Length: 68
Image (cartoon, rainbow, N blue to C red; front, side, top):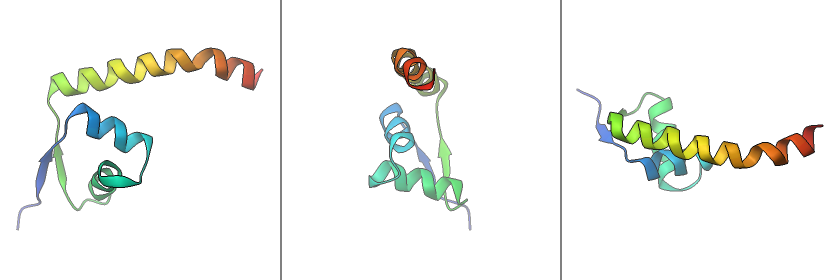
């Protein structure tokens, strides 16, 4: 029997990376455990990279102050 494959949008990916609780986190947990497959378009992947890069840039001053 073929694994269920789910198309993920950027909101689900980012929310799932942010917190393992809730639907998006459960979906990513099932993917990591090999229970489901995921499908991600290049457009969604680019959007996730852009959003995470922006969020990380905003965190750099805080991290520098905290770590140094």
